[in-house]
Length: 246
Ligand code: PXP
Image 1: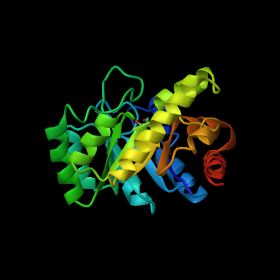
Image 2 (image 1 turned 180 degrees about the vertical axis):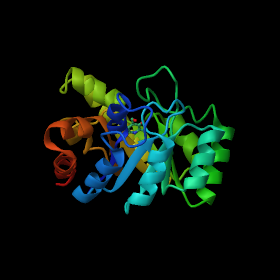
Image 3 (image 1 turned 90 degrees about the vertical axis):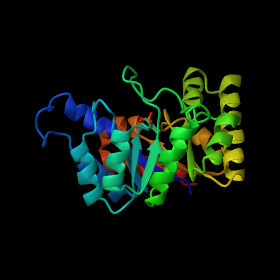
Image 4 (image 1 turned 60 degrees about the vertical axis):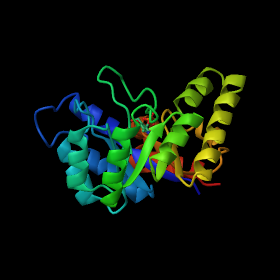
């Protein structure tokens, strides 16, 4: 069965809309994470952004203490975040590109271009026992470069597929985006890397994404947190798990 990592960033987005100055505002991302864990998800993901627009440092510390399932920390490849990861030792780190003006992570890393800086971070964090994945577009050069710098895992950016699906799920563009993801997954798996995927996945498009081979884990945030507003976190996670399970 495909594993599910629940990204709870947007629980913190709602909290930060009202409670910037205090540490016990609602809703609490740690409570959402524990409900997700109780529903049976396989890991919890948070993105500690440099501008701290949603998840705060203290959230990551509390999650690390509260969870029995792995914590996956998404972060930019900057020294401040490498220090945070080295101190908190999450089970997994996903390195993502980060632009302050973007609403969400808009594209994958350019591993080929930032090869030496990424290689240093990957080997440092992996030596600490952290599983490091690189968030990349499903492009052959990026997969080659990820394997060359010895990343143990990649996370394929599913945003182009999600956009095409949103416009027209039966279009050639949707089929082509799925083909690119399938080719990328085969290439990454063939190179010995674990292949995860995420971004823009929801209760509708995930059924098509399941046909991509060799995927280990999907990281899904916005759609689960949105559904949780009406049905609660446990049921929202449970419903997604049912879709991932045959
Ligand atoms: N994976 C990565 C690397 C991301 O940056 C994000 C967005 O923060 C997600 C998965 C989850 O995307 P979404 O919120 O659209 O499900």
